[in-house]
Each structure stands twice: as structure tokens, then as C-alpha cells.
Length: 399
Ligand SMILES: *Cc1c(COP(=O)(O)O)cnc(C)c1O
Image 1 (cartoon, protein in one colour):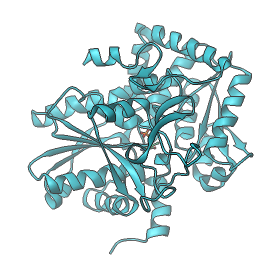
Image 2: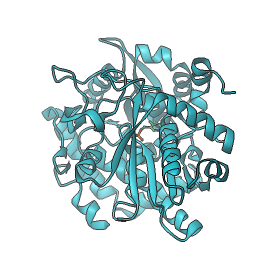
Image 3: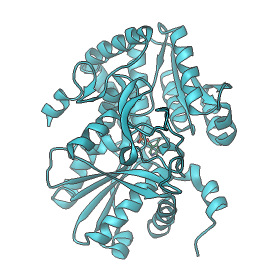
């Protein structure tokens, strides 16, 4: 196992063909500094101890693994959930935000900067900034600010400054531009915190390392509960951080099948989904190489998913490599299957899942029906409180 993590990524941040840092020279210098600092600090006793203490006393880790008896009875299989919805602030994202903020503190930075689309990453980073007493500046498209009002309010309550991106389409891409611009004005005192296993090196590696805790805990907990490893492990894939977090602990277990679930959206036509690995081609996006969805001109294609945390036209470079290696099976769940799973888990287990996580639950249910003798471990990446109004207003309540 350790050999895998030594080998990937290589010194230049490549996972075989994918990853790297395709960025302007000014940014290159900063990324190199962060990489060097991370390599040193992340191995220090102080850093490891502080992160361990934060995870236990602040985040409430380890999060439990839970056996879904009623869901399993209805659909077959033995279905288990890794409960990242119970991680502080309600999703796995805080795992890497606390790591990034702790690194910022050790580097003597004063301010955390990031972009956010739906606002989930912004809220998690604002939480981390409040904990460490750091300033926080979240860039967000003007259109998204209107759409994601509750998360904007959360960020403000937590003390973050929300900066509207007012050019172009006023959504995620413009927020990225705006945040990078702000970062490059003062790299001495600020650090850019990426929200998934994407972006230029070292972020795919760092975010993966901070998320590995999910897999390490889950593997041990599952073994304790059942005396064996799961037959299947399932996670949804947007950028891929929650998925790589849980997969990383099972990559060398040949009998354990790994499934990454992408959003199939409304249909499989371009613009109606965000199934990057299934329909994409390798290209460079946002400073790194990965599978991407692109239009005829080679520009990032419009993407859509009912789960706003999954609608990204790229994907983590490590996932791109794992796909080519055949180490992980990537498949699709559409909006309808997602909504059905959202209600099934709510009504059979009393757990309202995030719409992102509902993709993984839907796929787990399918696997259970196909393999009634097998055990299935699903990474429940977050809770669904943020989604309740949208789901009920759009789809209504089931009978
Ligand atoms: C952001 C988010 C995701 C998608 O991000 P990954 O990096 O692919 O994990 C999944 N689930 C929840 C609850 C999220 O907030």
C-alpha cells in the first residue's frame, strides 16, 4: 500500500499521464513553495498531533459505519454507510479544509481564499478559518450568490467575506478567475484552498492525503463489525475527494470492487449531465490534466446535475489514472434514481442524504439487487438538509 502512495503522484505531481501543474510562472513559484512546505510540515510530529486532536475533539471523528438493516432487507445485500454526514458541518469537505487551514497556520498565512459554486466548500473553509482565527475570502459568481442564499448567509455568520464575481456568466468559472486574481495580489499573506482533488499539484495530492482518514477509519470499522472486507465500496464523484478518501484504503484489495458514481443528470446529451469519466476525453483544465467534458471547440462543456456539488467538467487526475488502470469502475446514476434514493434512505433509515451522496446510495441499492449475497459499503459524503426545499418544491413528496 505505502508503495502506491510513494509512487503517486510523482515529483511533478503526475498520476501517470494526469495531473501536473499547467499554470503561469507566478503561480508556479507559489505552488512549489506550498509543495515544499507541505512535504516538510505534514511529516512533523506537531502537525500530525494537532490534526489528530482537531479530528477527534472538533470534527467528532471517527464518524461511524452504520448497517442499514431496513434498506438491506428491502433490496438485498448487506448495505453499510460511512457516515460523513456526521462529520462537523455535515460533510466530508471539512476533512481537507481543516488540513489546508492548519497548513496555512504553520506557513504563517493570514487569509484563506477560495472559490465556491454551490457554497459547500465556502462554508467548510469559513468554518476552518473561524477555528484558526484566520481571515477568509470566498469568491462566488453573482448568479450563484442569488441561488445559494442559505450558504451565503452561513459564510457571513462564520465571519467570511463573500466576494461576488460579476463578469462573464457570473458562475463557478468566473469565481475561480476572481479568486486566483485576488490570491496572486498577495501570495505572501494568503493561501488558495482548493475544494477537491483537482487543480494544479500539490492540491490533488494534499486533499487526497487529508481525506484518507475516511478510508482508514472505514476499513478498520468494517473489519471490526463483520470480520471481513466489504465486497463493494461505492462513492459519488464530483471532483473526487470523498471517493478517493474511501477508495484509498481498499486499492490493493483485489476482492474489493470500487465504484465511482457520476451524475447522469436529466439525459445523456451534452449539457444535461456531468459524467466526465464516462463521456470525457483527456485534456488540460484549470491547470491540470484529467478527463474533461468539452465542446467542439475544445472548451469546457456546459454541465448539469441535480446535485450542484457534482457538476464539474473535469475530475481528479488520480481518478483519471485509476479509470485507465481499471482499478475503479466508474458508472452513472441519473437525477430520477437519485431522488428515489434520497427518499428511500430518509424513509427506511431516518437519514436524509445530500443529493451528491444520494447518487452513491442509488448505485449501492442497484448493486444490492444484483448481488444479494454481497456486502456494500457506501460513503455517505454529506447530509441533505441543504437540499430539502429544492427536492420537495421540484419533485414533491412521495406517496
Ligand atoms: C462537494 C460535495 C461532493 C463532491 O465533491 P467530491 O470532491 O467529489 O467529493 C460530494 N458530496 C457532498 C456532500 C459534497 O458537499
